[in-house]
Image 1: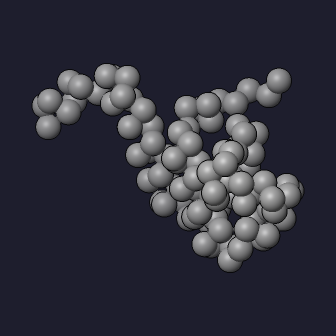
Image 2: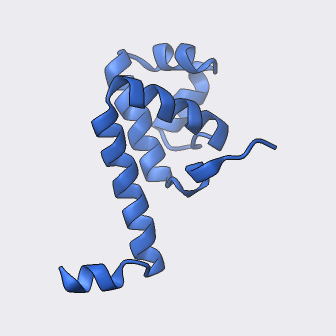
Length: 98
């Protein structure tokens, strides 16, 4: 099994935002599917949130998104990680001090 790294901590919401970023940049779900080497139907299921990208596909999505728009990709991931940390109570002290 491949090490997923931080991919397992990326929320479904962030995964969806990255997919939409790439579809907008590439022009269509068909083009995104071709870039990722997957079916268009898989991408369409992600768009309609019937499923979400696996960690393996997410790694490809992040790599492609970083090439296309590193700042936006970073913002999406950072927001998702921060939300995850807040939900776990990890950043309560930082929020209270702000």
